[in-house]
Image 1 (cartoon, rainbow, N blue to C red):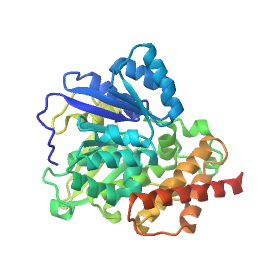
Image 2 (image 1 turned 180 degrees about the vertical axis):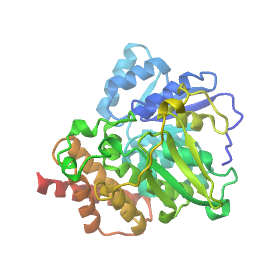
Image 3 (image 1 turned 45 degrees about the horizontal axis):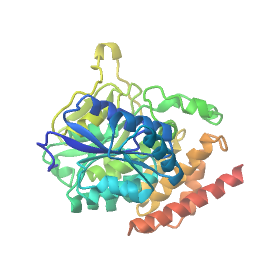
Image 4 (image 1 turned 45 degrees about the vertical axis):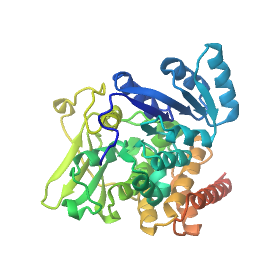
Length: 401
């Protein structure tokens, strides 16, 4: 992809979701290259103390909280230390710091559908977008990809799997995989903490067990998604839009070591893989420095210590969320948006210990089956679909409680 920003000595960065895991790791990489990057704006949902600490350290021009009350609290804290950071709140403010003329790079790391609008704003403004928000592509893949093209933006996937695929794809990119000699893409999955659990064991999984991922350090929602393998299902949908891959050109392979982050198979039989330690600073550094490589702080991969690389197919009976995601992708239209909304609410209920672990796929499939599916026409339509799916999911949950 052509990057109109290449060659600049210093680039201005907005981080959406700065207090989360991806946001923190982005700041860690940026801190290693102070001559190359400056922080323009930081945002957080409701973590006032966390964003205050970051503002004190990085002195951004803007800080954005989602809620007005949280913004008022942050503003008072910053005034007490005579900070010049301007505090804003709400969706309009997120859009502003994503599309501002002084911004070069936007790290889109807000979890959930709340990240859709600012990512769209960045695309329309022609920014370099480091996309770590799955829901933007899952909900509005066609609209977002068109906005990237129309706005002249540079899109770099930050999910370790899609970043790996991007790295081993041909440099001369085409909208058709066959034209690049690509047969299929293979997304690797760790299998999460319940890779070897029986169906009976999965029925009694606790919140604490689901949040204990064996390889990756992530936020609670995405960690539960990894445990149900919905995370991989959402990545299948993302891969469809990012690489213009048909559902049958996207395979999932369980790889417990999380050393191979994903692979691309070519029509001549070659399979290219990207390997590395399971540390999100690698794809973040790749996105920040592209097309150059930057030091990330990640330790070298010791294959002798890893010793072996194992692979097996995903079990769709024990992890039906992956099958349901493929179903939504094949149905198309608003189905992925409904899937995403139902999953967010179901995971939220599981984390609140209102429903069981295996209730999550059951609820999602019921909502998807009962919903009316239409063609995607606008962001406004998707917001309405998202809202309806959330209400339907809550109704299903209430029948179980």
